[in-house]
Length: 165
Picture 1 (cartoon, rainbow, N blue to C red):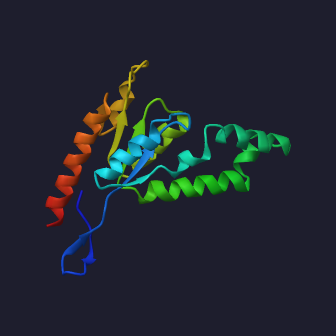
Picture 2 (tube, one colour):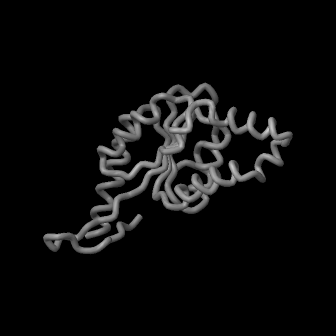
């Protein structure tokens, strides 16, 4: 991955564009915001805004659409679904890296697959894999601890700096 140069700063130094990481996980995982903060300290821009919707976000959307008499497929055509989809997709398109924090739902797996399909690196953080799945080999790396993941992210940052100079 090559670093992109933004331009010259006040003192003539080259300003480097920060890498954007899309943090994928469950709305019910209270560790997501903590992990995001730690990754920000490493110098990444982290997209975890989806977490603010709260643990009942999917249930609330479902209940809203059902109250309007809609089926799941009809609900997907609604403005609420379209808004959330476009918001998340924009950030998936903009990210340089994605990390799927397990446990996560089907949407998270789709998001990681989308990023990997774009040729971007995708990683999986497994806390205690209950289900063994060989398809996790699609990911560029699999980690069983957050410290391991942070070491990998530091390496990515170092390599980016080397590529940009």
